[in-house]
Image 1 (cartoon, rainbow, N blue to C red):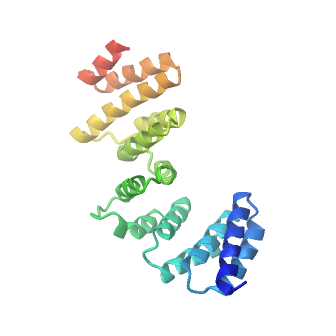
Image 2: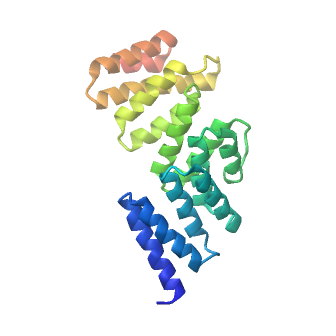
Image 3: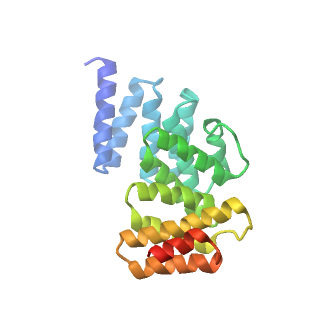
Length: 230
């Protein structure tokens, strides 16, 4: 077997081992693969991901960074490193990594991740977008734009219980900023919460969501119509 085929074989074996959570044996295969190809960024990315799965934070970051040294336009590596940084609450660093990916840059870190989620969704990577925004929501539960985008994605995947949990937390903790755009977003979220509870067969909670929305926005026509259509 020539070096290239041996390299690819070891990568495939490592991927299969990762699927069954045998990270230690996968790591051995990846180390041997790295000795066969020092120029392919893929093996460095997989080393980073495997070290992270094993809880070795220092080596995980080392290999994520080395991946981007080899290929600084590797989108999967940028995503993996940004997720790694998010999980370790290094939010600003994670947002900066995605800066080149999101086009127009806005100084708010949560907004950067929302923009990046649009890219992931457009590429069909909805689960990655959800995973990222769930982390961002944990870090910024008061940021209604994250709640709004995340719950739309969760509902598109019929994850109504997860969406209702995020909506309950987001609506409870959201900033009380008097802004027309955010107020409309809050109304949409109350209606979305009602719809989630209906999907879950929790009709009393569905009605309660609308009543709570009307307590916040007593003259909102959309909420009143939804309640009347109950």
